[in-house]
Image (cartoon, rainbow, N blue to C red; front, side):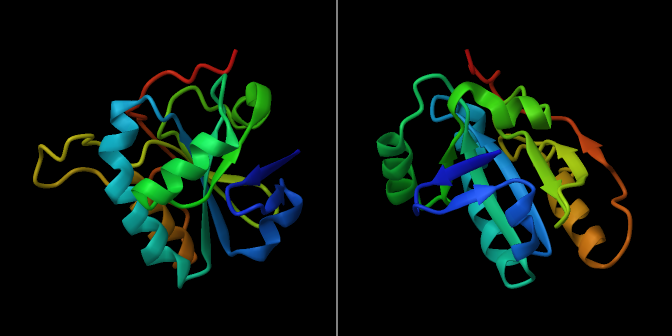
Length: 160
């Protein structure tokens, strides 16, 4: 299965995963306020972990997703590349049902973490559970993630 992102890069899964130590796939929905609330955290995670060999890819599996709309979102909101997933095939394969659902894949395509980015969509608590960051830190340190699944805070994906 392959997707093309806003940089024009075709990513075949699991084939192209070997380019990075880990690949984080985050499901995107432009209409979702929960996703928008997480954008700053996604940008920060992407930048922080790029130097450690972690690739980030946002995936729009929504009905009506277009490259033009995705390119505008990347440009206007400084997001990582967004790939279009016609028919929600990748979302289905990875079990994504909500925007912000994140999956960490190893170079062989094994899912090492799945679920939400963190436990606090609006940063209302002083110490949210940072599910994705914790999983990445654990995996890069050679440990099993302390949590293999976290609760997803996001809108239901409309793939059909």
